[in-house]
Every structure is written in C-alpha cells, then in structure tokens.
Length: 244
Image (cartoon, rainbow, N blue to C red):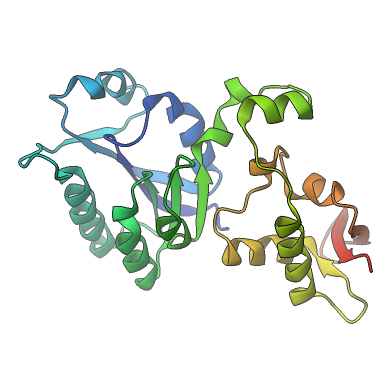
C-alpha cells in the first residue's frame, strides 16, 4: 500500500463507538495522510455525546444529519453524497470508510471503479459484502492497545478474542504461496501478503494474535521460511514455501 495517499476519512458516527478513535487514526496514518476527516450523525441525540468530547482533539469535522424518517438511516445518505462530492473534487487519492454497515458496499465499489483506494474500518459484526468491496478492511477490535497491551500470546488471545489459525486459513496461505512461487517453490513474502489482501481484504495477522505476517507464518508448521539478500539495498528479504 502507498502510504503517501491523501485520504478522505468518513465516519458513521451512529454506527462506530468513540472509544476506538485514537487507535483508529493511528492505523489510518499507516496508509496515508487523512487530509479530510468528517463524522456524520444527528448531533442532537444523546448517543453521540461521547463523540462530541473528542472531535476537537482529533480535528474531525462533524456533519449534522437529522433523522427525518423513523427507521431510515439518513447518515448513510449524507456520507454517500459527501463521498461523491469529494471524489469529483480530485483532492484525494483514496477513502477510509469507517462503519460496520453494509449500506456502504455500493459506495466502496463505486469509489474503486473510479480508481480510488478504499480502506474499510469496522467492528467484527460488519457484513462480508462491505468487507470484500474494500481494498483492505481492518477490524476495530484488534486496534485497541488497552486490550492487547503486552500480554503473552495465550492471554492476548483470551482478551482480544482473536481468531484461531484454522486449516482453512493455512490452506489459504499455502495456495497463495503456490500462486506466486518460483520454480523452486519459494515465494517472496511481500507478494504473498499483497495477494492475500486481494483474495481476502480483511486478512490481517493481528486477527490471529500476531503483530505481523512473518510471525504468523512462522507459527505454521507446513511453511518453511528462508532469507535472501536484498539486491536493492541492505538487509534480507523473506521468502516462504510449503513443506511437502
């Protein structure tokens, strides 16, 4: 991912708890510069009071959207209209859509059709159609440092509710290695990680209790790790292959 992207960060305030704000913005900064930060909701509602307390600190612009009809989410419409206005302004290279609502599936698809990079951020309850419509999707639960901290792996898994590395996950990684391997069966780990995201946008080593992809790979007995000198600079490149 290009971390020089200018990003528009659009937050569904009715759908996302404010407790994630610090870690969420730190995560977004890994992928680009959040040049536009807006949050949408009906600010007359008491449920958004906690968000009001952090908006100024994090320079997020609140957008008022009244709920005109009971049972209809007008916040979605406001976000979608703003997203299209920002798209046509030509001021950004990508979007971060922060919501757990599948109503933004079509928006993510449309933005990518226009050549935008789209990151999605939401809770684990997010429906799969929205997840796969994004280039990369990050679960909010894995970002909370207060939950993850410096616990041992077993304690970390218990506290942050991480996923198990199931045979299905192992097969996904092995098949991805096979897709990009050389004649000797070795695959550059950077290419493996990029292809994993294309196949499954919510794939993230942190979902399984690991900080990065390398230690996740090292935990899988069916995969061998090798290192080669980087021809373009110092250090080594990590390569992996399946153990037959």
